[in-house]
Image 1 (spheres, rainbow, N blue to C red):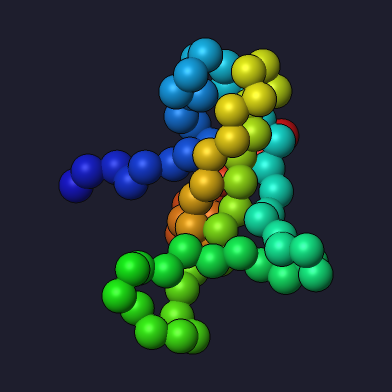
Image 2 (image 1 turned 60 degrees about the vertical axis):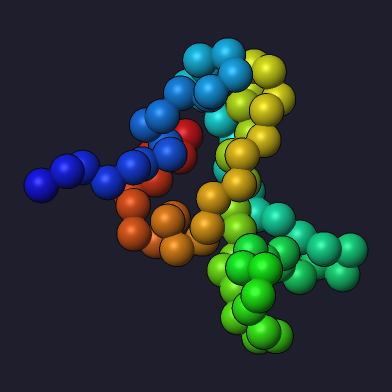
Length: 75
């Protein structure tokens, strides 16, 4: 059985740092931003969470589903 990807254990792809701040994406009214496939209709989509590197400030997006299926070791 292969191990699932866990973003809390993966280093920053830019600088290799392993310290991050975690948060959520929001729009101007404070609502979630979503990822939706190009041809998907209205309604669907997945909420996004962010991971920001403390060192180089690189920001990565992950689906919120990943946060619920993985135990994120957020410091």
